[in-house]
Amino acid sequence: MDVLDEVFSVVRDRVRNPREDSYVSSLLSDPKGLDRVLEKIGEESFEVVIAAKNGRDGEIVAESADLIFHLMVMLAVKGISLDDVRAEFARRRK
Ligand SMILES: N=c1c2ncn([C@@H]3O[C@H](COP(=O)(O)OP(=O)(O)OP(=O)(O)O)[C@@H](O)[C@H]3O)c2ncn1[C@@H]1O[C@H](COP(=O)(O)O)[C@@H](O)[C@H]1O
Image (tube, rainbow, N blue to C red; front, side, top):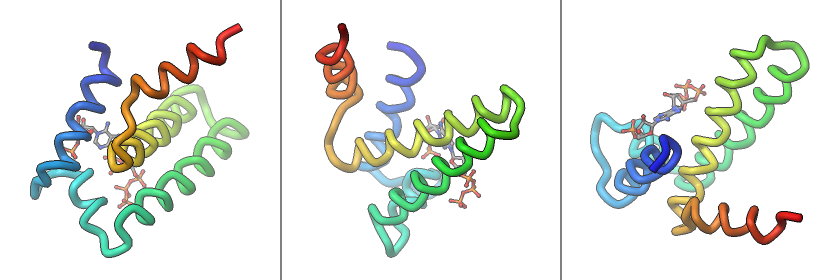
């Protein structure tokens, strides 16, 4: 398991078993529900674009990690696994 698998596994657990000290649980307890996660994906995407235009490598990496993390939260809510995404990349590979 690499770190993305490890984090995804924790995220999936938070979706099933909310905890008070959890960022994922706090995001999902928002009255907007999944829409709040989708808003975060929109915000983080914008931050990636700004970082790629003007930022240093460290900012681009940090904002990319935030975006990938929020995509993982959405996938976990939808019951889609990282392996499903891996399989899609494998299918597309030339
Ligand atoms: N990898 C991450 C991770 N990356 C980013 N974030 C959070 O994503 C948020 C990024 O959003 P912003 O930059 O807009 O910051 P913010 O102002 O705090 O966000 P909002 O108040 O606007 O929601 C921050 O609060 C970060 O802490 C993460 N939160 C948790 N994880 C991992 O996810 C797993 C579950 O974490 P918990 O749910 O906290 O237990 C654990 O393995 C964690 O290490």
